[in-house]
Length: 349
Image 1 (cartoon, rainbow, N blue to C red):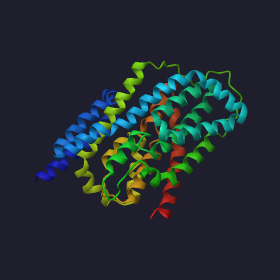
Image 2: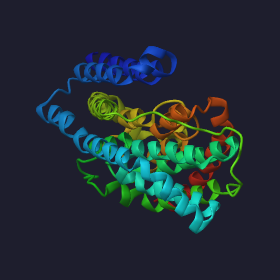
Image 3: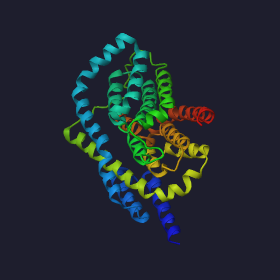
Image 4: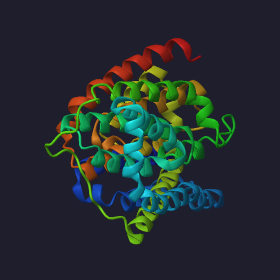
């Protein structure tokens, strides 16, 4: 009976965790605090409290937080030079191949510079381009797909990859810094290249005299430090939540087929994919299941604004509306979801 009560309690917490941020504005605004409370509740209900968990909760977020802080200050220092660098790139390569290079560098570079800094750089670059608004929205969306995919290659890239490595560090996976690159690199890197190529199409337009996308937010010491604190609390909360939900995930997830895991995670279009990763991933899963779960989360996370961090940052800074985002992102996401599912079903053993 106690086991059933525990599972029921964890199921309730998982339901609240997934749907409250989507349906309650205050929860969305204070997501880090909400997830922290849900994590504490999940660990308490499941009886998972242990010294190792507390140690992990404090230590695992440190690397990505320090990366966000250091690169946040570095980006602010480099920001005045960005216009000159961009003009040289366009003069050397032409507009289309400059856009291709930007998307490719932000996509693959996000695995080390973090998706957050990549998204901030993207917003600044789009502001400087001064193309027609529709083309700029297209570039932003494809770039965010590339960033969302590329950031998953190392635990420094985004909270999802940090959580994935933390949850799979025990045998049989023994995840380390290069685990995600080894597991997903052969799928992610071609996806970033394809996205950069398609995103640069129709980008060779002359600069527009009409107002395009722009952002002029000033990065202060306070805003940079506050962003780092939010990242730290967010990842800590997901560590606790993932540990607390482990009994629920172990009971159901490893027994699901790969196709079900893949398509079920299309819900990541409206729910943060790092939260879903924390709820689903357990060491009992096979490498094949891990690949299908993560690729499903990464691709569908690009479809709508709430799906991942680069979407949220870029749409907020550049004032892109949900409908504008969906018109371009959903068809491309559906194409990627189907294409990856077919290829992975054939080649991932």
